[in-house]
Amino acid sequence: FLIVFLYFNPYSSINFNITILLITILGLMSDKNIFPNPLIRLVIQILILLNFVYFAELQISDVRIDFLNFFLSNIYFNIFFTVFCLAILLNGSNFLDGLNGLVSSYYLIILLSVIYLIDHNFNILEAEFLKIIFFALIIFYIFNILGFVYLGDSGSYLIAFMVGVFMIELNEINYFISPYYVVALLWYPAFENLFSLSRRVF
View 1: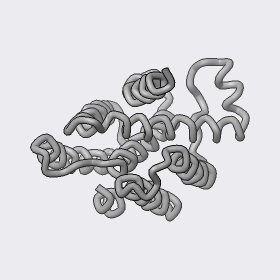
View 2: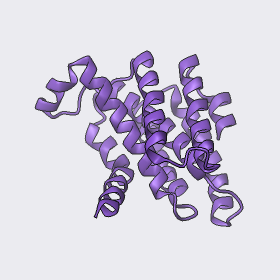
View 3: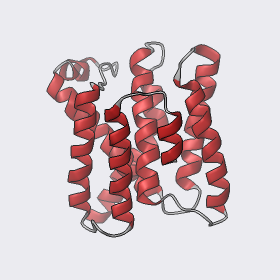
View 4: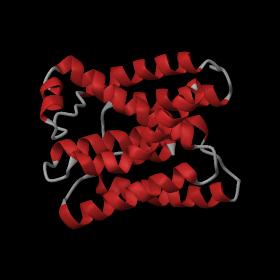
């Protein structure tokens, strides 16, 4: 996936490519138990995301809730909120990765939905890139179900980051795509994150 993302991605930003590498390395370190403390991993992850969001000027400017839009108009709150959303998605996807095929099939459904939407309504540069990721994920899914390959933390982080960034940008550049559509697609990892954390607290 790392090779596919770096070679085919339509973003020429060095910041984007470095962030992909850092996210993957952090996940690999987690897989190898180099960072067994989840709090340390979370802090490093947030710093990586904060750097990306700030320098890429990635924003969530309109959620169609007036009082929240008021806060999002503040650049510092916007950065915090965007980083928070991405961090929830990354860690929620990691929590989902308990059974073979669960995370990969979930993101296959999301990508299929988005590709269908784009093909029938919008002409977007990233459409071909999404199709490449989709077919790469299908191949991975087959081997994942058979137990030959695993996503691990690195794979979960990487796919969640890519899809999360794309969904934010898709929502920002297309007013006719409702933010509720994006939230509906990405709600499952967020709910899993909340449920897992609540269960561990209790």
